[in-house]
Length: 108
Image 1 (cartoon, rainbow, N blue to C red):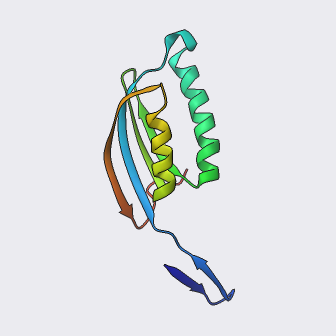
Image 2: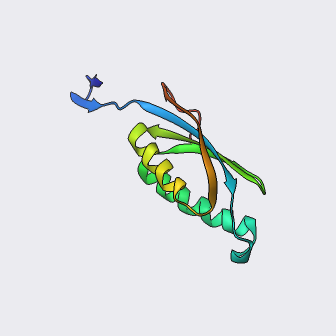
Image 3: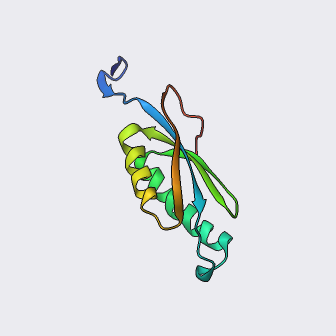
């Protein structure tokens, strides 16, 4: 879809947004430090990478599960999901929802 910004006389490609929700079994390795320390490292890297990829979302976790929402361009969040499926910190990753959206729920 294209949108004309009359004031700037530029055409900009507006790509549709999607939301992906998944859950997985938490496989953090206690030998690699505390869960909070490992999660802090994960969140630092994720925030940096997601900002570059224009992904927003949320992560909920406990000692047993991860639940995450990813929002962004469909191909970008699907590539991120594929990487997560290969991450040893997750087991039995399950896609809950993949839908097109009109607006983001999370601003990050």
